[in-house]
Image 1 (tube, rainbow, N blue to C red):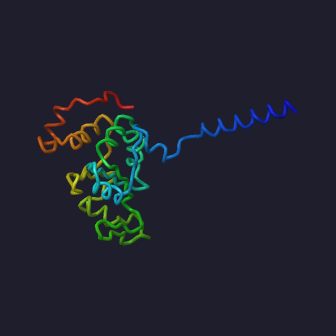
Image 2 (cartoon, rainbow, N blue to C red; image 1 turned 90 degrees about the horizontal axis):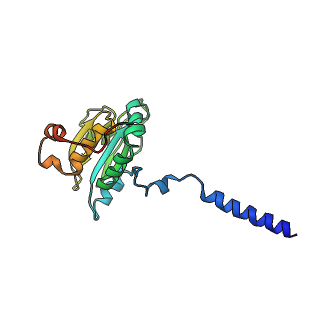
Image 3 (cartoon, rainbow, N blue to C red; image 1 turned 45 degrees about the vertical axis):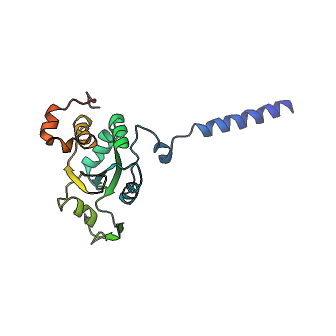
Length: 191
């Protein structure tokens, strides 16, 4: 009987311990500094109605885009990039070919041909000025106005200068080419 009680106790203890060691969920990762907490465009705009206001960074991607996947795997997953972006921006991932309707300030944006192959969503067309190349990024100011559209894949060390240019408001001070020429980043080697 004594052995049975000990076995039951140890079994319960080991079960409780194993449950505490389960992998982190996406919701738990949202509070981690080195993981970008991606939100929807409507959430980002809503968050900017409250304090603290931040710039909005939108990653326009598609499911078939190899460079988009590489950007996720290398640049957006880099701990320094993820931490900096989480501090300075509301970060949005937007599938440029999504099929559902998105409402922003009582305006409906749709995919005009949701069953069509590679049919671009109106919101993506609007933000990217009909230049549908992926990945592309849009930086919006705290008043939700587009500051810049940036196309292409970037290594973490190259991307650092872009996000800091906008994150530190250097776009008010100098042209990007000058900023990039003078920039000394924290990321010395790309993974």
